[in-house]
Image: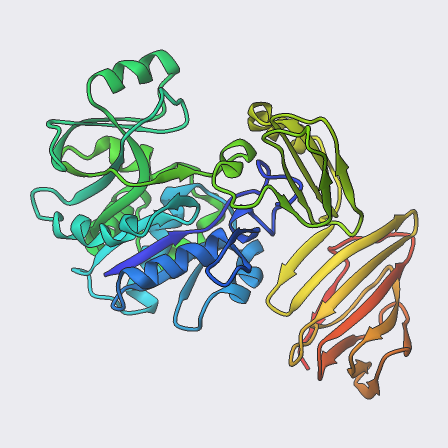
Length: 435
C-alpha cells in the first residue's frame, strides 16, 4: 500500500509560529514518549510506521517547504514537490504520476491519501488497510467518514446509506452552510476527513480525463497553469459509486489555535510565567524574551521572531485576514542544512543569525546589490570567495563585496551573524553557481 501524505499549507492560521515555509505541521508542540517536543509531522510519521512496516510513504509538499521537510523525514520516504499551490486535486495528481513514472509503482497498487495534520490515535492509521480492502471495480473510491460533533461549515459531508461501519455512499456534499450542515447531520451524515483510497490507475485515468495528460513530466511542466481545485470538487462530487468506512476514534482537526490548545499536553512552552488567577491559558514562547501573564482566562499567547499573538481562544479562528495584511520578510525558517533568524531590520541593512549544521554548506552564490559581513560566533569551517578557500573559526570576520561568489562549509556546527548592507536588500538578489 502507498500513502500520499499531504503536507502543504500557507502557514497563516497558526501565525506567528507558522509561516509560508514553516507551516503548522513543523511546529514542535506535542510531547513524545521521551518528554521531548515533536511536530505534527513527526507524530504522524511515527504513527504510520507503527501501523505497518510494508507501508510506503510519499509526502506531497510545496517547493517552499521541501528543504525543511528533508530535515524531519527518513531517506526511504519520497517527496513529490509541487512548484506552486494549486489545491488538492493537482497536488494528488502530481503525486500519483510521480509514483507511477518515477517510482515505477504498479497501476493496481492501492493508494491512500491523507492530510498530515489531524490529531488522531493509532487506530486511525491502522484502519487504512480496511479502506484499501474496500476498493473494487464497482466501488473505485473509498472515503473515511468522521462522526461529526457540530454542524461545521469547514468540512464536506458524506451521507451513507446505512449506519454500518462500512456503507455505500448515498451522496457527497462539499462544505455547506451551517443550517444545511445540521440537516445533513440529522440524516446521519459524516464529516469528510480528507482521506481517500483508490487504485493508482483510477486517479491517473481521472487526471487524463480532466487535464488531457497524466504523465509526471507533463503535469509538472503545466503545473502553474492548472486550475486551482480541490480533490473533493474535481473527483469525489462526480463519482457515483463510493464506499465509506466510519471512523469512531479520536480525531481533531488542529487547524486553529483554539483546536490546537485542546490537544497540547503542556499549557506553557518556553520562557513563561503565569500567576494562579490564570485559567485555560496557553502560552508558546519561541522568543528569547520572558513572558509573564496575570489574570488571563481563555487566552492564547504565541510569540516568535515573526510577531506576537494575544487572542481570546475562539476569536483566534479568525486570524487569517489580519495575517494577510502583514507584509514582511520571513523572520525565521528551518532548513535541511540548519536555520536562520532575522534579528534586526534597518533601512539599508539586515542582520541574520544563521545556524549551519556540520557537513552542510550554503549554495555558491553572489549578490548584485548588497555586500555581506560574516561574524563566526560558534564552530569552524571553510569559506570560499571567488574560488579561493580558507579556514575560519570563532571570532573570524569575513567581508564579501558585491558580485563576489561565496559560500561557507561547516566542518562542525556553526553559528554566524550575517549583516547584509546595500541600497536594495531583496531575497531575489541571488545568483547561484556550481562549484
